[in-house]
Length: 325
Image 1 (cartoon, rainbow, N blue to C red):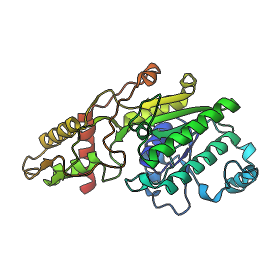
Image 2 (image 1 turned 180 degrees about the vertical axis):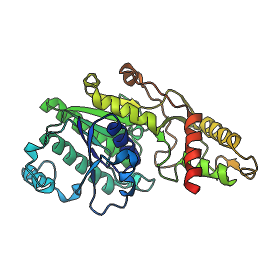
Image 3 (image 1 turned 135 degrees about the horizontal axis):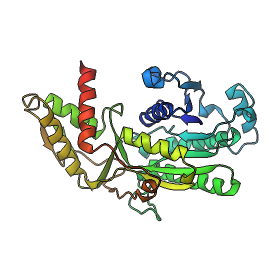
């Protein structure tokens, strides 16, 4: 299969590209001109990745009649001659706590996602996979989402638009991946799992929120396996897929399990000063909304989580130690 990944330099994009390449697919990754996040895209597992550089912001809106001509110019060829099998859209700005509450950034994200969708149509893709988020649910349910952040609202808005377009046109399947909490090496260093790992190794105190909300973690390699399954299988059809692990429990339980795993794995003296301080930090843009994923549809395709949270945290520890030399 020929697969385009927009946002290929992201944590999820890079892992997905590597997994798809390992399975023999041809992967074309889109990055912004001048992007500083492309340094690792020629690592061993990504040498076959083909990079295309352009900025969605430079294209007219997806509803404008001149979009096809602008796309052909950006791609350097007639868009009708470049046929692909699928498109995976990870490109999304403003994923930090401040950006999640910025309506201007999130509106631009929606417009650029629409451009990617139209581009996939013009290139003949049979399916479009969108990296949505559990933030779309907010304080609501799967059937009645109530997002509490501009980020969650924007993801939901695009998902609803694309689903309607897919039904109307009938030529390209739309898979809305509502991704819960994926962790692993290569993610932003300020994520909970990364910060916890480094605090345990250094013996620093670790300040957290109350951590009372229900949570679900999925290791990045398991995420990539699920992504490959959805990309390859025609039985995946259309619609929403919750992308999550098999264990949902209070976030505090995950934190305690992670700390116990990390501290028992190495020199006890190294983490002698480590302490967990719950209830110190404020909640993020999504507040205390919990997670309650339903992975039955994903499981029906054959997906099975392979990496436990303990195994994932030990791998993260190993990679951080390797990085530190």
